[in-house]
Length: 268
Length: 113
Image (cartoon, rainbow over all chains, first blue to last red; front, side, top):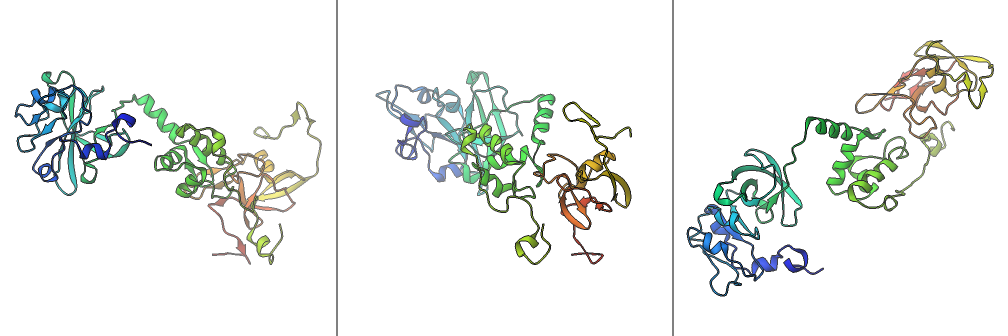
């Protein structure tokens, strides 16, 4: 598959490397700094005019990619709110463990400082947990809120936004909890929540679920849970049920005592 | 009996025919059972619904599928654990014990380790 913003809507590593808006690793260690992930030569220059410190240059023609002067940038975040393409972020390399990433956020409800959120990469996939450290929404930002989250340092080059905060009613939460507690594998006592967690962790087949959770490895050997697990897989992954069935079968099909196999004890 | 779960008048199968009764023992207590019926049926008729406790959460379990697939109704029958009582038939003098977890086989009167 072809990579890059034209084909996937996501700037590729190559494109980012060839742009002029990415600050050095050394600068990121000195405090928050703009990371301009603008890789398409489009006629657009609000970033240049909005930076109070003159750290961003587009010049002439207007289709030039923005150049960042990392020593002039103070990491104030104005350009983050003003970029119409939402292509500018701040990264602050705090320590070997922790980093802060700042991004524009235009969804209600706004997060609150201290919230634990799911941090996502450029493709919108959850990569780690983050904790909200700043939420800035002054009038000048015209309702583009600028959110800062603290994340593990290892993800500072990947995390570029967060999942929306879904506020649920107590009723919805109770329903969700009830649903998650539904018994799926009776022998190993696994709930729908356990199976869904295994899928979140990467299981895509009945065998994948089995290896992660033991569903189907209990006394009944999957006779009760196989179809339920298949249906949860189908619903959660959005693929037809038939893709998951049947799972692997091995003898013995019915529970028998070890003596029958050993042939030196009682017969069933 | 008030809570007798036996179907005495079935809309299709008709009235339950008379049958010889045998005695089985649940935790030492005698229970009358119809000869040839599954152990689970006799226990349900006697008002006993919890046959065992699960391995991890120690929750009570009884008859679930009733066709020998799910293993929910397992008990220790005559000292042998993991017997599916819904597909095992009563015998006169049978000793039934509820099973906790996977159960242990009784050998020479003592518990096997």
